Length: 513
Image (cartoon, rainbow, N blue to C red; front, side, top):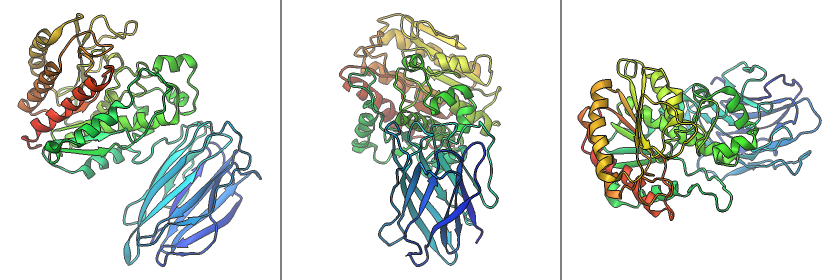
């Protein structure tokens, strides 16, 4: 069996001094050494896992006498209890450094034996990091090729790379790979494939990443989990709504939309106080995780519909249409709609192109200013926004390809009349190949930010008009959640659930083609 090498490296130079730590045989579940640590120094370092037919060996390399962090490892051979391999150390740790769990599931084949799962757990601590690191490793092919994503928050910390032989160095100053669970474009695609082909609606969720917010913060973060639980408790959806955790989107895909300087400030905890105020959230590693999961869910849903696995898929998050290339605002860190559209254009050019463009259909009460800015002048993505004329964003409204500004108190009848006029026009004029639906429900009369005065029944009618138009034109649809800010949040949660419930009902009668 070919060996595989997992390397953790500082982005500049790295050391060559090494000592062997431990190895374990997965055939016999016998521990061959009592302790194993993968250590990362506060300065330059690298560590290697070498996998072969007999097991996994860990080599520790460091150029400094002080080890600032360790990964205590544990493993769970099939049919055996978890075995600990070492314990954490914390030399040179200051009180300002945070620590957080690092988990991963590894699978790799054994010669002449079954595939064996391994669970790897630990804590990341380092003087060079200002926040915790997260990561996953996965061995999943016949020749033990390796995919890894190591989530770090410092440009000057450590990078994760993989190879089947020689180590791969990264250029000094290059951003680390910030993916996790499924971290690449291939990973989001695999998440879609794993969900399978069926009638009804496929939906990804991101609320398994919990974001701590200060007491009294105005953003209703709990609505995502509440909406998911409401849908999952509906017995009528058991066979027509498939719900899966969202993979994290990759840095490579985020870089296709967002400026490197913005990403560097985000992942190194270097956003200024003003940038955080504009964003609307205090920085936290959990915020980054959730934002990448939200974006990854939208990308995975896009893969699902463009591969023909479903005609409709969605994410119980997303719709973060206020994020620009170089900054976030209005509770939007990454523009998942823009990232999904960019992935679609790159991976499915025969489907999505200037002849058959993508339609970003934004029905949130707030204009999709970030999306409009990102795709300004790009004939491959048509932006449409129907929003409140007197609502946020007041200073940063941009020009969409089509903007419809609605007065305060518009109400159901006038709103639906606008949609009844515009939907056929958009489909006739542009012949979209894909619809990315920003399905915000903040036009509700109960919404604290909305002002349009729509009822829940009117919002449901809105949703079904979009779904019918897509079905009648055989156009795949991706649904994102968007805004909803009623206080208490019950009205928004109910309306959010309606978006996905009605989609599951409507598309359960449609076979993806």
